[in-house]
Image (spheres, rainbow, N blue to C red):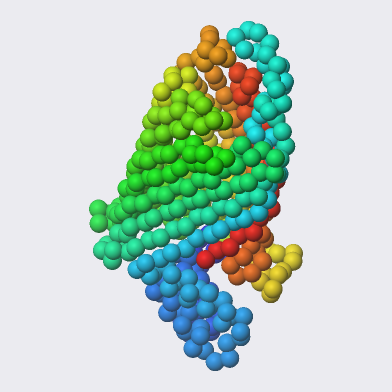
Length: 389
């Protein structure tokens, strides 16, 4: 019950007292190994797992479970670690091009009729995304060097003008602040490089730096705050001849809080504030966004390849507001743009094998703007397959 409630220390205390009276019970050793693993005490966990394997007549499913944990401990304690995930699949969007809802919009007090290309249009795409993490442990008081790479690409069935490829890499040292009596606290300093390609043309290149402070308050609760600066260089193209109007500096301050309520329920919240300074004042803006989410894991109603892993359903919702510095003279010479954005998204993750899972997503996004041309909504749904390694 303590384990299910997330009180890992109480669960460990109870099981260790039991182990005094029954020192050779593999089930107790296994559960203790799992709990210490969740606490991050990998060497203690390894000792308990090895005790399980040394017992006579250990069932094969138990051996398989222990072997997985031992492999994970080896990865977690390695000097050089590399892991990642690749997700590929298909997505449908009711407004794939982010087009306007109404054909007739207001431009400086006059009605203007949009052509079909500017209106909301449904489309499907095939996509692939990847997230990769490399870490080198300096073996000096817990310090390390991290590299994180995120990639995404999508090809649309009809709107090839929004075919996209992007990459973002962050790299830098992470310092363990236990040396300053700040327990379970880390300080990371990192560089940022990234770029976006649209329809085969360079659209945006960027670079900058950031600093983040991470704190684990308990085995169940952790938080992170970060500050980032990036210079964003937008490139003109035939389709987007004025893209460089957006070139300039971007500042971000954000934070996220995660809490494991029980073994099967976790919640999170985030709050971000951004400032963008562009060449054109009507492209400069400030925005704030916040969101909440919950994930719930439950026993699988179906199993695949004898892999009975838990299914996980997630629900997240968020809200944001964006305020531009000055009016866009081509749209409304007397009033600057004001946007309100909201979203809700649900996901279902189904394990298929040890490192494979299927993920389905349904979401809704709405942007309400005092500039008619920028008001839109979008319903999306996707199905994909994820490979972790």
